[in-house]
Length: 585
Image 1: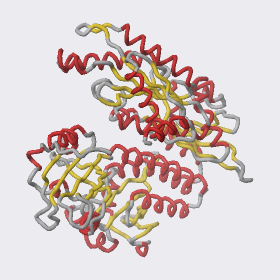
Image 2: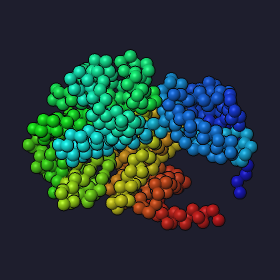
Image 3: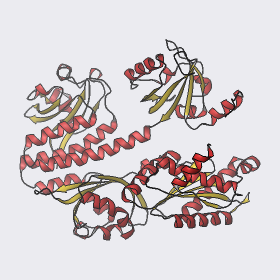
């Protein structure tokens, strides 16, 4: 039986040490309440406010224009009912910048008469951005497939693209307007305003006309505040905010693709970027349908303009079509790539890592994953890859489209600033993906945990600057010793984690021992030599990621108990479960 803790200082210190943002308020839900009574350091780091700036204030100071009002009403209703609330919305930092926050609020004590509400919060902006970027990649692939299967049916192309543009941006309506003499004419509409097909607006006095004449994208955040908008026509179709992109191909502008909403500020710059890329595909298809000649050449020019490596790979795993991005990436002309085996261009090691995904695509499955792609100059670039099966007239898979996108900027946001290893959130994202791959294809996977021995006295004796130098040196040694495909993370403090795909338990134990010796032999100017303790676990396909991590962490703990500076192997999953069960008896 656990004894009660009455030491307020200990409880506060515990909350201060929690990595998740914690906010505690009183129980006054009526305005101007509730009032914040405590905010931990993680909350302050996430929002930019100091504890003194928020204590005594209402959590509403985090809300802004994009905060979900209906969700906040649901929060109030559930708290009034004594229920636990979970949700996600947009909040705002002290500097005014928005971020997506996932949070859970619990009444304390539980029941219908709590004295406090305890909120645990997490910034999920990076995760949502990644999901959004993947959705954009999916959308581009879908639009490419739509227009490629529509043939030369001009209206089919128009209708399919406006429907997809409306769906992917969450717009109330979408339209294509094309120039006829001095007017812009609605030639296709999806959603709100569908009855306006055929409506004409003067080119000289409309927002669409401005986009068409200048051939520049427009982000109209509020039509009531934009003098370029034909207000009466905009109100008629429900256009309060919108995005407009010119449909330009080979120097000719065919018209404008527009999405709109009845709400102001309904779209983001990311939505505009997606429409810009999609508009290239649409413009190419319009040109093909209108001019009929040079269909393949013009579409290839359009695809070449996209900042993505696009290829068609046949069932024998040979390149059959590529865009210009391939020639720029590999510094080869198209003739040196088309017809060649994928393995020849990628290299055998990367090809073998990618082969299971290719086989799944040839089996008719849509596949998306991340990969480290070697460059001709020897450097490595992280890419997001999408394989989409392509079927012939008989319904058999004849190959697949490959789309690869550079995600270097996104990866830099997931790095620990001190060591340049992945931070914990970045590592957990890779863990989920890597475990899913290993489980699906029954591939070996190992996890190595290590913790520096007696690290706290280094900080206490020599200061944090020296401690930081040690952490940077340790990270460099780890990177020097592991493979490029291994994933190194600073798990927290002086603890690191290494995820090793395609690695058996025996090889992982050998790697851990090499790392232990390398760290022990490393000399630091101020502190001399250091040691580290290691825990190694082999992934069991039947276990969860959480159990996998728990077994590795437990092995590390056992290495510490056994005297430090050693490697311990984690017990098997069933054995570990049995040990945990008997330890509670």
